[in-house]
Image (cartoon, rainbow, N blue to C red; front, side):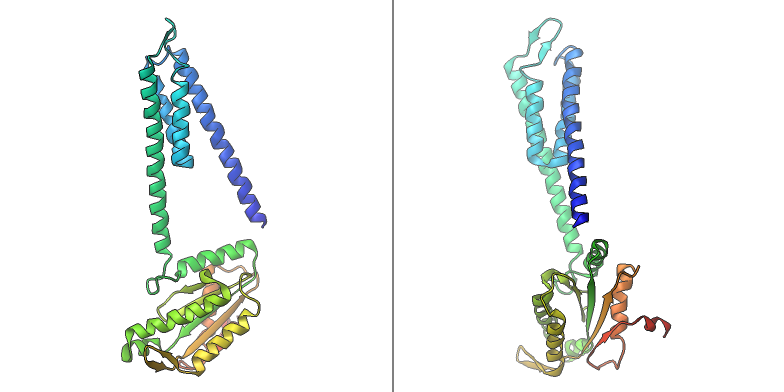
Length: 288
């Protein structure tokens, strides 16, 4: 909560500085154009600077608004020649106002488009290569870091399907992916859509924190017990799934997100390879 308030205050301060900068530039350039003799000199084109900066800071409509303001200040209120008192022809300042507005509009549109494409690219980089509806380990590490910074208590639950490769190889390739998909959707009911991740093809990770439903741990355990105890029926097949589950409870230790995730994997590496069970990480593992 405190970090959110601080971020909002920081954003408000940054926006205020940007607004003051744009206002200063518009007023300063208007004054400079006037004292240098009016719009007959090339200095009037300096108005493009605050117009483009507004587009960069706030997008399309801000660029358009800044262009209109600059066009008006450099328009009917600004003489063509100050010393002779000659005012501009309306067609000149109206054309310039339209040009400023178009530059602000188009610059803002291009910047918004670039930002949108970059955001889409970043989102694609955070999607699992195996399951396109699940985030990958990069997103997991980012979310773990956010939980650490916010001081939230959380658990990492790593679920390894130990016989998935055999199912894929000897039964059906699509069936193997359907099994993981189905399990992921069930886990989402307990901790939310954005808290179930895929690292490897045969591994799901759950980041369990405040947004999980009440009694989520027991419900997840019951779901996993059902998967490992009874054959899964899908696409006409009945398959017995072998699961190993590692749980790591974070307790304010000074660990990186990767170290935290690895501890949940260390936990499930106990026991026999094809044995289904739930294992909790213990610091004594480091001495083994």
